[in-house]
Structures are given as structure tokens and as C-alpha cells.
Image 1 (cartoon, helix red, strand yellow):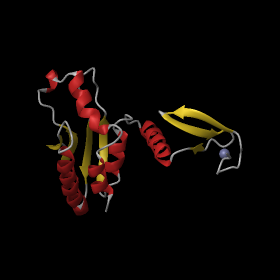
Image 2 (tube, helix red, strand yellow):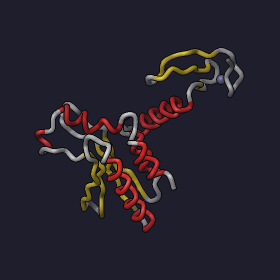
Image 3 (cartoon, helix red, strand yellow):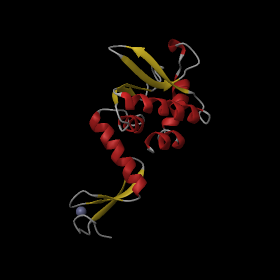
Image 4 (cartoon, helix red, strand yellow):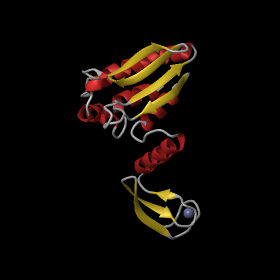
Length: 169
Ligand SMILES: [Zn+2]
């Protein structure tokens, strides 16, 4: 096996982010299953942008929607009982149409999820939206198990039905 990029035959097989890949020792190009490589790339992008690995696929999906801008996001903290969330703003008439689509696909995805995900609207310097799981109890009673259950749909990413509906147009 040789590197597609530089032709070097010195490929080192190793595990990276839970995937078995081959890394070119000359140019650093990664070789392996395309899905695995995409996942590794997303993890690296998330690291660069400072997002938690578990939430980054969702951040990326939302960022790709016309007029949507992610302000902050977290995969949650089990130890602190803090659920995951993505906070975003929307700009322009197209974004309003997309918001409706996002919420529709969320409602469809919710049928398959253990925790319902909701979009909470708050008024902070204009309308601000927070996509998050609906917790059944007050924040101070949220325990690690509840956070872990809420986060489950984020692993490996959002439910396929939601993702394709959002990015499919
Ligand atoms: Zn190479």
C-alpha cells in the first residue's frame, strides 16, 4: 500500500479516535474507511474550534444551515448535572424557513429518542435559540445518569433522520 497523496510506501497503521487507520510517515495523509476519516476530521475540527467532541457534529450541522450562527455549545457535564446544548441565532427570512424545517425534523427525530430535544427561545439581544434535551426535573436535580441519557443521541451524531432532513436541500 502506498500513499495516494505523495506515493510514499511508509504507512504506519494505528488507532486514532477509535478508528483503525494508516498514516503516511512522509506527508501525514490518513488512509482508511471514508466514514472513519470523516469522523476523525470532524473531531479535529471541533478541537480546533474549541467545541466538545460529542457536540461538534451537531454544531457543524447547524452552522451549515443558511443564516444560522452557533454562539456556544457544550456536550454537557455529567459531574455538574449540566445537559448538552447548542445555542444559536438566525438571520434573514431564509433562516426562518429553515428554523421551521429544523424543528420539524427534530419532532420526527424525537419519536426515536429517549429524551425529547427541544428548541428554547429566549430574548437576549434579539431572539436566541437553544437546542437541548428536555430534562424531566429542575436543573439542580439533574444527575449524571440523566445527562448521559440525554447525550446519547449525540453519539456518534444526531439521528440520521434529523441530519438528512436538515442538510438535504
Ligand atoms: Zn504521503
